[in-house]
Amino acid sequence: MSFVESPLLRPAYAWHRSTLDEWNALEEKTRTRCKVVALVVVVVVAYHYSLSSLVQTIGLDTPLAYVGLVPLIAAGLAWLSRKPKAAEPAIHDRQLDYIIGLPLVAAAVIAALVLPGRMGDMYWVNRVDLLFLPLFVAGATTLLFGVRVAWRQKVAIGYLFLGWPWLYTSILLGTLGGFTSLTVKALNASLRVVHVAQASPGSTGLYQVVHNGTAFPISVVTACSGVDGVVGFFLIGVALAAVVSGSWMRKVLWLATGLVLLWVTNLLRLLLIFWTGEKEGAHIALGILHPVAGLVMFCIGVALMGLLMKPFGLNRVIGAPSTATASRAASAAPRVFAVMAILLVSALVLSVTNSNLRSFNLVAGATGQPKLGSFLADPADPVGWTASFDTEYTLNKPLFGEDSRWFRYLYLPTSPGLSGLHSSLPVTADIIDAGSLSGFEAYGVTACYSFHGYTLKDVATVNLGDGVQGQALSYSGATSGQNWSIVYWIVPVATGSGTRYERVILYLQNTPEGTVSMSPATPGTAQLAASLKGVEPDQARLLTNQAFLVAFARQVIAGQVHEEDTGVFISAVQPPGEFSNITGEDAAHELFVESLHDATTTTTVPSTSAPSTSTKAAGK
Image (cartoon, rainbow, N blue to C red; front, side):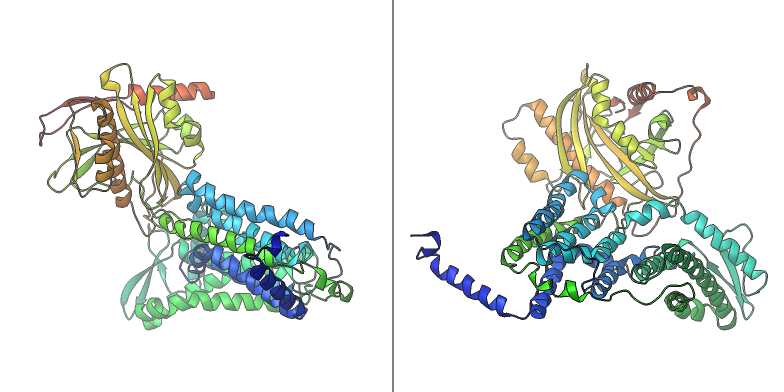
């Protein structure tokens, strides 16, 4: 008896055969429409949170507001490219469909399962999920329709990469200041001709508008500089340029003209707001006109560039089908039941991992912009504790960049009755702020301790809440005074100069004289109590200190949440002259190690529930 003739499987096999016959009996157009619906469903299910977070940016007053239009524009490009063309490759090999489609889908699934755990909050900051979205769409299209159709849709699929915010933030963050300055200069020049407002002396971008003898201020900041309209037209212009005929030189010239025109329309918008404020007052100008004027002027600019396409030598939409190719379309991917099973399983796996990305909401917004404020600008204090500035070290600049800064703070309990975290020893915090992650990757905390002869006793990856992952470490040195428990993490922070990165290291001395405790309501207390059963006193101290620092770190991170940009610029300190002759990575690494372990401070802990204790807090 064959496998399919088994009494248990015979009904299922019969149902499969009848369903397959019904599928094959459908008209080709009907089958194509069903596969299109299936493609849309699996993509939406797999990336539901990524897509919804992107669409939510539409209409926000942010430079990347129009990036949320990318999925919709890509769908429009796919519709325009739906008909076969004569230039399509004559590929009708179903095995090739699987060879190309399956690895693309698998790459998206593996990335979603592995990368968030390895990258932590940087996975969401860099919006890596949107980087793999086009790969999944390409793989699903290849499996459902075949390589030939996927090639036909290469423009629509490739356009999805423009929805990856990192492409813009990596460029815009370095140019936003200059873009805003250009707008302000142009606005100042315009106001010399059109006297509807006056620039405030000594305040760049601040203007005074007088209505009926009463002045009110209007501030032109980055969000008003017109960069959002420029980005929006770039997205729409690229899509239009991809579907019209004409040389690439003409398309580039048309696109560049549109970018300038959209910037000019924003300048006119600002002048219109000033004029309305002068004539009608602040409420009409800022409360009614301002929210809608940007969208109206953007639409006018796009419409004007649409009318200018023909003068630039750009003709109608491309899309004349080839009857020779269209006649063979029915042979592409005739059986899709196995493919649908693969795509549904992949979509469900991706859906779960995609839902988990909600945990990164605290760290960054939908476009990857940080929500955490800089620790250096405003140190966060857990309840009942206060951070006091101790010192700044300048030896780190050869390692982390000339604009980097390294501050040390000491946390001391000030209101023990309000806090669930109690310690007779201070918690020391070292914060290194830098413009990139490269220095942190090259000079890690673990490598530093190993280089200086410390012994690693314990290491673990810890969840510090809302998508932030950290490392918990315990080290022992040559003496009992050099035993430390450490928790550190690296996060992007919002500053007035753009996105920067901060490595925060909390450490607590492991000594029998110190007492550390947490209230029962503190998260992690129950797990700590279970792990302490039957362990040696030294190990119990390490576990207690580690749990204490993890709970401490969670409160510090929660205190850094800034829903909007802090507007704080962290000024750089020039490196001392005596370090100008330091060259080479080895010399820089030696400076780093020596600065960590030679920079010490003596602190007297105020008497609370434990007697005063003098401790020497070694650096990391």
